[in-house]
Length: 44
Image (cartoon, rainbow, N blue to C red):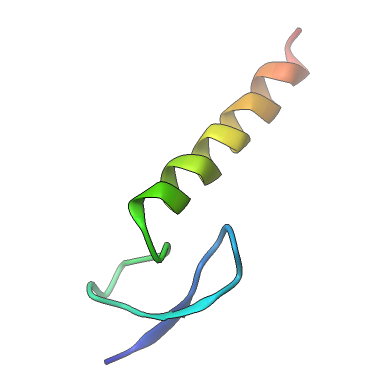
């Protein structure tokens, strides 16, 4: 199995899919929510 590095936490994990970038769905949701909030703050 291939390993990857989580974009949010930086932890190493074993990829279950070739295009997997996060170790868990919760990390993915948190990452994109933070990114969206930063973009929203720019346009206020």
